[in-house]
Amino acid sequence: MSDASSDLLRLAAERAIRYREDIGERRVAPLPAAVEQLSTLGGPLPETPQPPADILALLDEIGSPATVATAGGRYFGFVTGSSLPVTVAANWLAAAWDQNAALYVMSPAAAEVERIALGWLLDILGLPAEAGGAFVTGATMANFTALAAARHAVLERVGWDVEGDGLFGAPPITVVVGAEAHTTLHKALALLGMGRNRVITVPVDGQGRMRSDALPEISGPAIVCIQAGNVNTGAFDPAGEIVTWAHDSGAWVHVDGAFGLWATAAPARASQMAGFDGADSWATDAHKWLNVPYDSGLAFVRDADMLRQSMTATAAYLLTSAQRDSMHSTPESSRRARGVEIWAVLRALGRAGVADLVERCCRHATRFSEGLRAAGYDVLNEVTLNQVLVAFGDDDTTRRVMAAVQDDGTCWCGGTAWQGRVAMRISVSSWATTEDDVERSLAAIIRLAGEQ
Ligand SMILES: *Cc1c(COP(=O)(O)O)cnc(C)c1O
Image 1 (cartoon, rainbow, N blue to C red):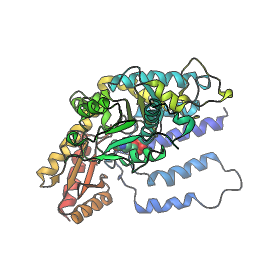
Image 2 (cartoon, rainbow, N blue to C red):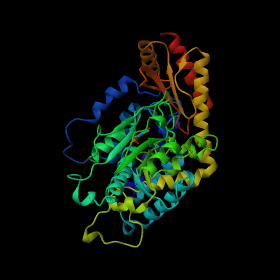
Image 3 (tube, rainbow, N blue to C red):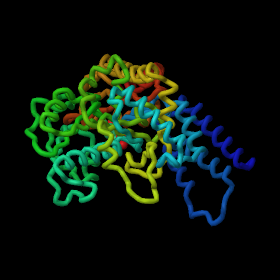
Image 4 (cartoon, rainbow, N blue to C red):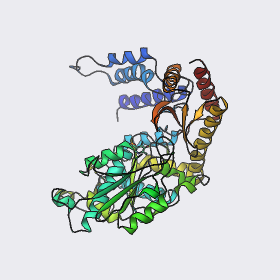
């Protein structure tokens, strides 16, 4: 490589390192002026080449101040992890490798790293060692992938080849979801031709858990979707009872555990995951609680053959190998080796380190709920995981407090609607959050709420 290329990569690393060094002290939401500056990245398409170092400088000087500090410790919006330094470092190296993870022959390194990471994931998440896995972009695609395997399996049992013949004229599939199923689960059902709305919806309790006393009668091909970790409350569906009921009817059980699945990794939280290991497929995110860079989601399917048969691409030029060719387990063909960061974080933290990461986030959430309650505000959920819902009075007041918190910049929390009320949601999902971050954020929220 030329000296200029090496210099460019060094420059990029230096700028990136400076960005991460400053992240702890900067405001979380960018200033409106910084966002306005983004238009200077535009203009007409350049007619001639420009020096790469200038491009990088522009991106850093204009782009960096307009980022949201999700990599820091005081971003509590949605369910958003940061990225551990070891995962960013591994991501840089993997970007330099520029491997295509589609086929073993394209990159034995990517294939082996992912095979090893998959084994470790199944272990730490308490899932069957023989399950198949897919490294996809996020939990939306993980739900999609696992539900494609489910669709294949339940129709194969009644003699229908859904990949070959499609859904036109196929026996109908009964799909059961909870009233609090994540919106992306409905999106996955829509993409698979099973219909966003063509579902039986099971009512939920005050925490958003499916009510096991309100399960429908089902027969024939059926898929039951349950949730580990409600996006608002963090609550878990009663998996044991639902899995038994569903399997008695021959249904496939799929788990959306985008962040909740990680409760298994923390001994003090793991009891909430009881019964979920009896399901047939699971979706989770690595870019949320495992704190790896985007985009990184995971689908696991107990019967690896069902995953393969739903995802296999056939073409003579692809050849087949005795090795694990991951494109036959994923919707994508060519893709980056996103297993590298997962391998790195599991190797770096080990079982104890992941347990500590999960537990620490849960403890911070508990501290938020105690601090807010002590200040006289309504915490709307049972805080047993990393999610806190708080209301500051009527809906308008809560909206004003949220706007003030986002504007103030000490931390960032988003809003949600919870069982008829507007609530501010605090999700603690970042390895970088310290006790000091929690205290500073709590103080800012309480001060701003007092001013509304
Ligand atoms: C975040 C989330 C999803 C979607 O995950 P993406 O990574 O954004 O695709 C699905 N289900 C639940 C419960 C989630 O929290």
